[in-house]
Each structure stands twice: as C-alpha cells, then as structure tokens.
Image (tube, rainbow, N blue to C red; front, side, top):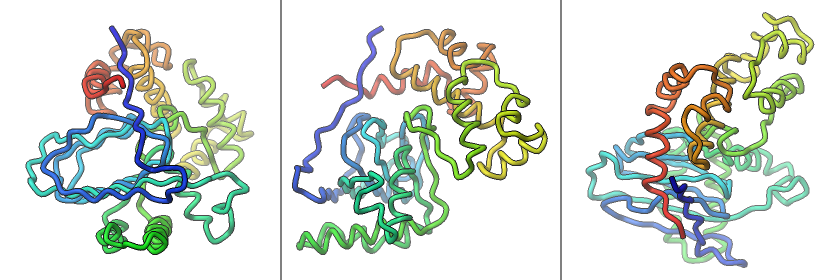
Length: 294
C-alpha cells in the first residue's frame, strides 16, 4: 500500500510580509489535509457540523470555531462532513514569529503570548467566551487597510486570547512530535521516561521511584500537576504514537499495536475507538483519502 503524503502548503506570505489575511464566504470546505511552515489562526462561523482534524484530534464543530496552529509538521483540515450551511465564513491569518528564548517575544510583556504560541504547536482550540472576546477584531481585521494597524490589531487578538481561560490543546504531544514540558521537575522526569519507554510495560512503582515518592503519593501528585490520571496519560501517549504510525507507515494494525505499547490487539482496538471515535483502520483510511502528493 502506498502511503500518501500531506500537502505541504506554500503560503502567499513572503519574506518581508507580516500577515496574510484571507476572509472568505463559501458554501463548502474542499481543501485537503495539509501543513505549512507558517503559523495560522483560523476562524470559522456558521459551519456547524464541519469536521475539524488537527493531528490526531477529530471533532465536529459548532457555529463558532477558532484554532491556532504553530507547528510546520502538524496536519490539519476542516471537512464538510454534515454541515448544510450555505453562508460559511472563514477568516484565516497566516504569520510567523520567532519564538527563540532570546527573541523579542521573550520579553516580559509577551510572556503569556509566547506561552500560548508554544502550546499551539499541538493546535489550540479556544472557548466560545474567548472567541466572543475577540470577535469584533477578527470580524474587522480584513478591512484594515494600513498594514501597521492591521498588525497591531492582530497582536491584540493574540494577546487577548493568551489571557483567556478555557483553551485546550488538540493533538497529543507524541503525534505532534512536540517535546513534553512541565512546571514540575519531578513530573518532567516522569514524562520523559514515559516518552522513551512507552512501548514497554510501565509500572507505577518505577515512576514513583523516579519521582522519589511513594506510589500513592505520586499518583495524587501527578494528577494535581497534569489534571489527568497517570494511566490515562500513558494511554494518550501510546495512542499518539500509534496514530502517527498509522499515518506515516504501512505497518499493520497488529504491528502498530504492539510497537506502541499495547499487548492485546482487541484491547488496542477498543481503546482506540473509545478515544478517537473510529477504529485504527478507519483512522488510517480517513487520513489517506484526503491526502494527495504534490
């Protein structure tokens, strides 16, 4: 079986350009799954029923959707699915900022903005409250004729979003190929161990020893710092690697099952469907049918 590659989009954003803004009215989504070097903020309204795929995240959106993507490798697409609206609006802003630790955005006033942009390497979906907070600025952005003022308005949009609560990452870190980060050194050491040993059996006692804590205390500590049970986190990491192998390789589902740390094929299929809403085979087919070689 030939593995198709995602379109790597060459955007209209040129070397000295600051922003590319596309404000469109349309009746359907037809563009295939793709990725691109530049960052992208994508706003969609009046498109309830559209399926949004970002990495290994697959969700059906409501009337408003706003997503930020800052990874050149993260595949994404908005598919028509069950949407019947004939007045879809999509505002896409493509841009690029240097996120190095010595860049301009590393200065104190931009702390929350830079943090958000780094989180968005996995794709970041914003809450309805956050969308409404910046709706007017997004709505009028394409009508700002002076480049400087368009840029300042866009920076305000990003900054306001960075201060809002309720945003959530979409793709798993293992699928998006993003290094794990943590505000706790103990949690980071454990996450790095899991990332290197996800294909093997991982015991709670081993992780607790790495953290220098008792197993019960570590379980509580991990959930407090990550918001997730340890077992759920390990499953998420393994599913991310499995999803990436389904997309990027021709390995069988059984091979991928065992190579991503699951020791039972039927259990793998059940957990995959529960978390992804489809079987591993369907996940692979859905990706490949919308991917073309360019």
